[in-house]
Image 1 (cartoon, rainbow, N blue to C red):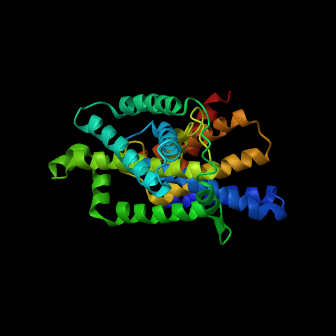
Image 2: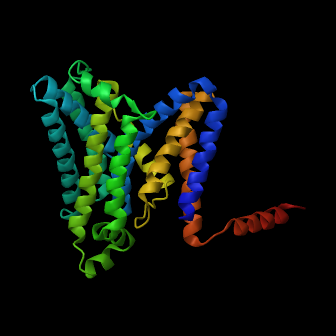
Image 3: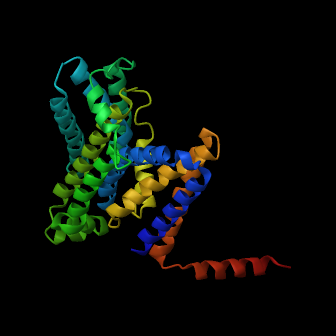
Length: 327
């Protein structure tokens, strides 16, 4: 709880800085754009966060988003499938990719890093082949859906309301059901969870399924947001943003720790950092430097908390260090 409160305070500080730097007349439009970005990015972060809780990792999220988006365009434009059926097919595709990853990790015994790294290359390559490295003209076909999703309710983007709904479901699952407790148990000590009677393989596969399923939902949001797909760039680095958001939100990459509230706050921090970087007119290529630095700082703080190191211990160490260096 202290960790969540700490990052929430940091989020409030970032938002205050944005309000100060923004023209009051533009507050409404800026808040709307922020809520839209948080809604789209937050879905992927939720999926990755659930997987990280079990001690897993998925580096293919960005490519899965690209592949699912390209497949959706192919189903709608070439196969003439009605959009609701195409959406259902994409959700099945996402779940299937997650199930494949989970089976390869659990029953085949491959490293999650290797499996998902292969997926990172394979799915994006498949998307580029499917679209012939072109931009499908999907905008007219999804015009009504895009208009609805890009609208707002009470000044907040529809995407953010969607994220709120999925956040509520993920919160109930992870924190208020026995299945969520199994996720934490596996992340804390997989062998102990196995000996206690938990079907470890099943729940690890379920975690991968949920991760890729949320990525498929994120792919649909991307299509309805920009009404197009570019296989060479859609979803680029999304896996890193999702992992960074989850870790910033308090999830430990070792597993067994994390909250859905923290995941959403971590995503919001990343989105606010990007917005603040743009307002400060910092070069685009320096954005990863800022985000990487924030992630590293969060990882250091997480390790400090795990080892029971307090700020007083650090200050004492620094005083002793400088005292030794003083002639």
